Length: 398
Image 1 (cartoon, rainbow, N blue to C red):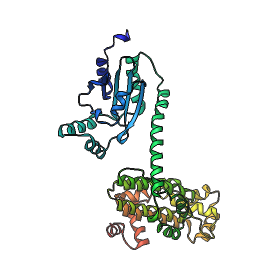
Image 2: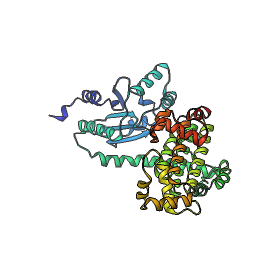
Image 3: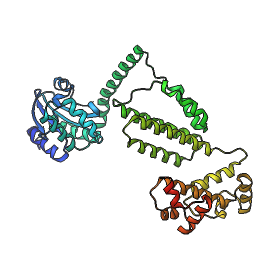
Image 4: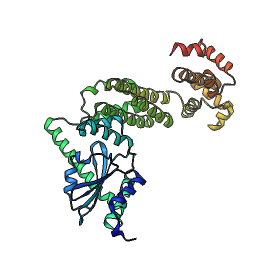
């Protein structure tokens, strides 16, 4: 095959048909064709003039508005240029689409065109973008390039932009006397979680309104959500260090973050953050070894609490911790005040209360999950412990 005879327009059309990568083909700075015809009007981007006037870089990519990517491949001799994108490496939210349209749409026709573009353009990974650019480069310049090497070179552009933005922001903060002052507070704040110190945490929270936090999103709701995620991530790690079971901590973190993402106002997000932090701290406090309790019995208590959905005998529990039944039973009774079987039942019933209040599982499903021999037995034990049937308890706490 003679590469010099490749019709670039036809080749780009084939590339688009195979990949759905949006492209603009330019010659001497003028758009010759677009793929597809409803491609995003890239000439509206601020960086556009710089892209078409640049004639010394053969292969590059940029991050532009709202974390969209574009790629540029040039033939420096023929003054041909192919601009790929803009594309996103993750799903573009309807809010982002609206923001872009408001920034770049001049009239109703371009509004519709841009909306159609983002709804119809698939998500691409950065590596896929670079590989498609490499194919275009091969057709334009008849050479194979090293994608990994090019990605590293082009990332210096991103690095420069980050540094430039960072320097500008730092200057502005210094001029306004607006400094990040959260670091030492964070150390103290999260130490209360790690120690399970609820009273200390209450006092620390009173300082929060006077602190200055960094800007990590242009949208105020997203800013609040990002801070929430950061705080919960740190709280999770400190809670684990403080003795909270790893699986419990991470599940708690996931649940709170998922719940937060459903919210659309800052007040609700902040209130949930406060609830989550106190929940972590309380659980750490509960996970601390009580005064007068040995490590062996504390580990046994933790095991029972974390395995309410399993069926095992006292003999199996004793074997797990290296005791015979009689020795463990006496030691457990002496240090907790409960015999083992009663404590196992108590923990199952406590879990049943949580499931009745905070899940949609039926009473039959809860009974089966907690390994009761029958639903009738579960209902009898629950009423014996709490003086109310599971059904009525759920109705009272909905």
